[in-house]
Length: 155
Image 1 (tube, rainbow, N blue to C red):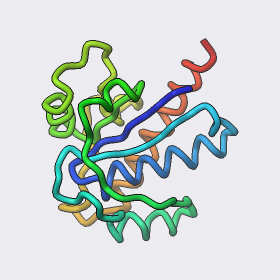
Image 2: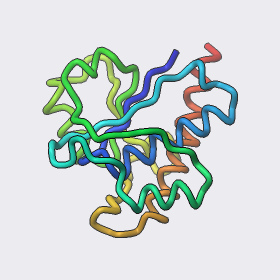
Image 3: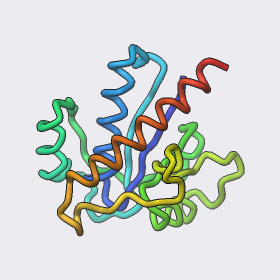
């Protein structure tokens, strides 16, 4: 079982998109029973809110199902609950470390670290308004992450 927690600033755009894209990919691969996939925020700004309408529209356009979701803030104990904690940008990673204190088990990474674009960030569509670009980056990152996870499951 691989437990993944996607993280962004508010948990209504990027991390939510990554959660649903990854759930869809895992389901399509017949691996849903081997994963727990969730998302959370580093901030308190959107707690209790549903996904951003831009995320919802993009998921519908791409035919990716969404389940009920309400933004929540990451907690310190999430570090113990999840195998992988994946941020969308360096600021997210910095704030994840602020919440959990340290990363002794090397669980914290960035989504694009699982691609050839390691070290790059996924732009926040809250500011850019470009949900198409964010989706392309999230999709690429989730494909790379799934390939990595398949290797882990095979070991």
